[in-house]
Image (cartoon, rainbow, N blue to C red; front, side):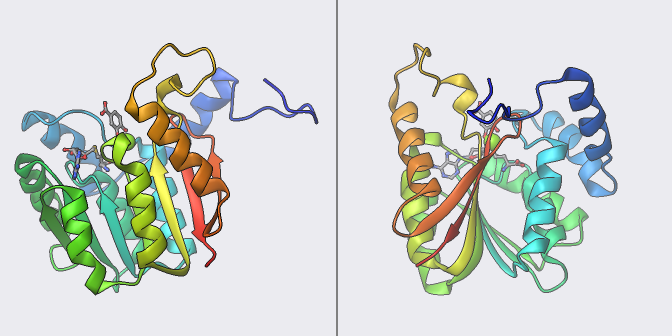
Length: 223
Ligand code: SAH
Ligand code: DHB
Ligand code: MG
């Protein structure tokens, strides 16, 4: 696929992708052990990739985030990346439905030395977000949980990020389900289309879809 200027979208050359993934996948410290600990505890292997973890860390640092909300904790892999990016003054509120996932994550944050900076909220994200409103405004929100919830999480961001605050969201290509030829027509397709449209251009956000393997939306709250 090329646009009208003849430019593609994302890296389609396998060897170049291999080069970049290798360069971006050098994890050290606690990050290197999270996937194994998570698998041993029986959690699904759906953490962000090492490369996407690096994107989160660099973006959190670039925008100077101090207060971040994450929807979808799992074992804490992406949370550690966000905390690394925020540095010593950073605070992460991370929301997780499954108490088993939350307890693996709590151990991750302890091992990473982030115990006092990471707050794991167990329950439906919608309920936790309603309670967190009083703690805002926030600098950054990372959305990576139930895909049908993305539009509501974005609406929360519109009301609870500071102007200039940033939303990141994983899996916004929905594994091919947004393509015009996809046969999948479930609620997540409609939800992700609405999410992407609002994140990219709407009265309160200007954003883009970064062509990572699974699609990483990045939007800035403009008013
Ligand atoms: N961000 C994590 C991966 C998250 S996987 C990482 O990259 O390391 C998605 C997580 O969202 C799962 O742990 C799942 O239990 C959780 N989840 C799903 N629906 C949810 C909801 N409604 N509220 C809160 N968490 C939810
Ligand atoms: C799934 C969810 C994710 O957030 C992800 O990055 C990969 C897979 C899933 O629900 O299968
Ligand atoms: Mg994801």
